[in-house]
Image (cartoon, rainbow, N blue to C red; front, side, top):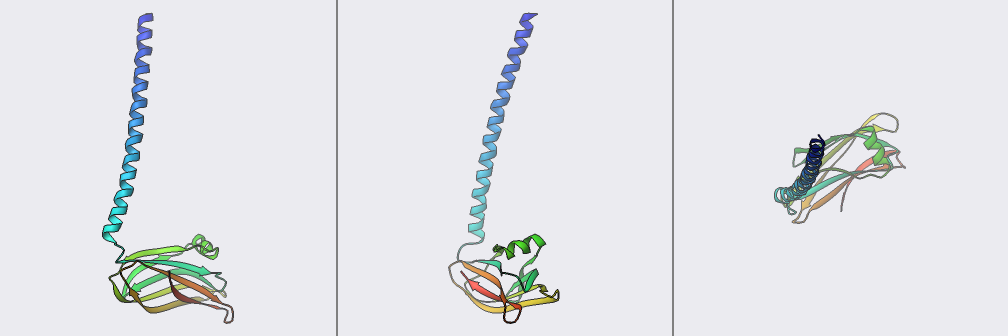
Length: 165
């Protein structure tokens, strides 16, 4: 009887040791898969969006006293490329100085017409649109653009401008 008890305890300890070893192997495999996934993501990004065609757009809000954005649409050469609807939390973050990445595009080197429309409400609660259309020149380097919503205290209004980093 004691022999069976000792044998069963020995068997249980061997099984537990094997479980620990298997768990360790599974954790190692998970970490390797996550690292491989990060590497594949970076490789895919470099292949699909090389630096020569990469254009990145960000949105910032300077104080936001006279304008609260609700949505943004960005078109390049007449084609709608990026759009976003804002939550209250995102608007609050923009007012606190956050820089919101709107999105990445692939643009061939050369001149492109960029049109941006930001819809929102002014400080009186009235619906308002801020719009800008500009010709940009894409070179072989990445293009990083900021869509800056600026308060104009003299007019108690806001305006939109493009800023290049």
